[in-house]
Image (cartoon, rainbow over all chains, first blue to last red; front, side, top):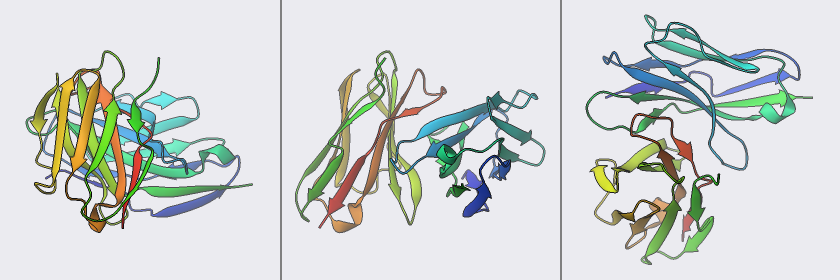
Length: 116
Length: 113
């Protein structure tokens, strides 16, 4: 069974600071995709960033970037110049594109609080 | 383009009643997924469809749960009879293909009393 682990239940930083959320995963597959989703209080699941495992270059999306360490099975999310609107639950997810289910396997989430 | 649409947004029902949740995927997407989110178990995949055909329903908790996708623009998740432990947020997501990025609807918050 695939697993995704987020070891930080909650984090709090000041506005404008940089914060890094951790995620590790476990798979024997070679071909997979990694995602970070944001869930604000509205409960909407919003895609933040996506990384293909076969790509060595780390994905970047404006203030959001990842540090993808394939050998270590680590996929952390860095948020630069954090804003109040970044306050939300953040879920790391893995999509295994081998045989079996094509659904996402999610971590338990990190509650990120941006303080004014 | 409209995103994934789910209805109702909130549902309160009594134990034993039938509950039907509805989902309209993004136009052109051929894969549809149903997830459930609870505090205890987090986000779990219940079932997914590819080209309207159920591919994997191993996540469906019991026979009380059933899902259908009669056409490319509509899916239902039915719980009959409902129980208090079914209380959760149910999400529908769609993607261009089973391996592509999934986009989520706003969810249906279900409370079974």
